[in-house]
Length: 367
Ligand code: HEC
Ligand code: HEC
Image (cartoon, rainbow, N blue to C red; front, side, top):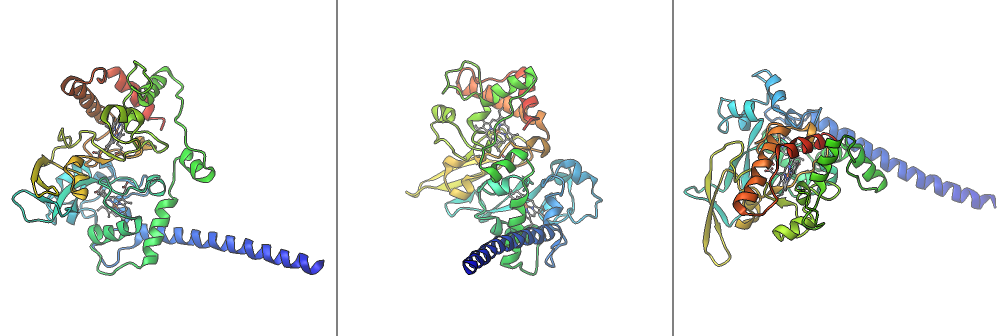
């Protein structure tokens, strides 16, 4: 009897010990990742991940850039107005960096033999999304957090010594541990999907309705728009209403919010050539065609990852190129876009009034 008890007791100790040691190892990994993210330079240009993905928000604001002294390691290489140059107007005004996006084999830039497009892109936060969103980068080009980190160290930090697989796993583990929105943390810990806040003031409630109303599916005459693209627990996928209007599958992750179409944030339009399977070439002109450069499909032109809106109020500026400096500029853009859909594309009821804008702004502050 005693022997049997002892056996089970030992076994359960062994099981408990294994579980604990895995957790300790997991914590170690996260802690190591935190150190690498904040401090590792691998004999490069002195930048760390945290040079751009700041400690406070995991992103980089225009204000943060302008607080830095001009000799800061941020001001070099891809922060310059032209790659490697020594003027830094763009990064001071927009907080964007020049990113080299390899072109799909079917894509080329008209009149250029280059196999990469150099595009100004803002720094998205690595918090909240890393743990919960498998789509990485605004055009979805990174296959994993590990390969993204390797690419970032080589591209932004110009490292001359390679990180190990353990280093890459540690950084990924740390990024995935950074969940700052309580509703998302609860989702991970308990499996209960986050719910949208109800809103308490009349304005917030109107904002909620504008945000969530998935017409035409629910037959509601009150216009709702945001949920067409910002639905699901992460508010980053298309809805049944978008399926009814645009015919795209529910849960689509890449779409256009007309940022490149309207040249929001300026930039230089270039002509891109897309070769179809039958050899015919189609062209399109854009400041940044986004997803299409990765898939080689012209139908993906100007589509970008639909980002989560949880905590977006804290991570201005917005859009792939930081084309909107704050929520007011963002909503001015959506108003212009929705009014365009109503008047030019000709879908009635799509417009957005100034009152709608103020309401939705009040609601975004709750997410
Ligand atoms: C010089 C500034 C800079 C540095 C340094 C930097 N990043 Fe980034 N990071 C960016 C920019 C710009 C983007 C957006 C690129 C795009 O969308 O094409 C980005 C995107 C990301 C994303 C994708 C987030 C999303 O929502 O899709 C992750 C993850 C990331 N970086 C992690 C890292 C890690 C890890 C390091 C260090 C190894 C690092 N970054 C170093 C500027 C930087
Ligand atoms: C047709 C699809 C679509 C609709 C409708 C839409 N969005 Fe978006 N949203 C996107 C896409 C795509 C992006 C990323 C665009 C880019 O980077 O160029 C985005 C980006 C954003 C961002 C920036 C987040 C960040 O971290 O940069 C916010 C905030 C946002 N949308 C809020 C809204 C609100 C509020 C509404 C309703 C007024 C709305 N969206 C309607 C597709 C849409």
